[in-house]
Amino acid sequence: MQYWLMKSEPDAFGIDDLFQRPQQTEPWDGVRNYQARNMLRDEMKTGDQVFFYHSNCDEPGIVGIAQIVREGYPDHTAFDPDNKHFDPKSHPDKPSWYMVDVKFVRKLSRTISLRELKLKTELAELALLRRGNRLSIMPVNAEQWQFILALE
Figure 1 (cartoon, helix red, strand yellow):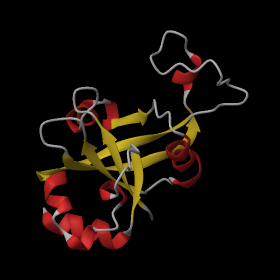
Figure 2 (figure 1 turned 90 degrees about the vertical axis):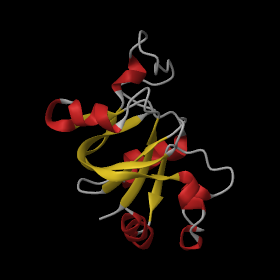
Figure 3 (figure 1 turned 120 degrees about the vertical axis):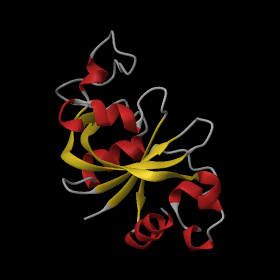
Figure 4 (figure 1 turned 60 degrees about the horizontal axis):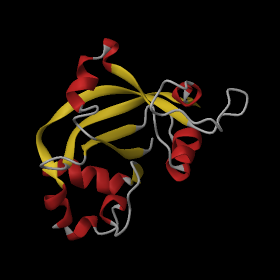
């Protein structure tokens, strides 16, 4: 099993939105970064655990846990000219973009804020905390995962 952190703006799609979806499951679509796309397409596997992270809000931080329930498949939003994630260079026969399906596991008892994470020397290598890292999807190693869960 692998561990991940996936960022979403709560005004666009937050942990409560995932909780309210049918079967508490939703495609994670709209990723338009090649490095993140490669993780969606090639590395994320069914059963992998995900920290759900709220970004671009008053208190950015980890707010919940989700699980990968469907491995990478073509992101159909790239093919729809009426969708905000449309990419005219992507084609169903040769898709440029991929998505996975995530399922709600639980909300954390509290938000573990970015500010708090930055104070923990044990997390110095966490991709989220690396200078210049703006990816919306990033790996978390098992030790980091356990350490962060213990903060709850």
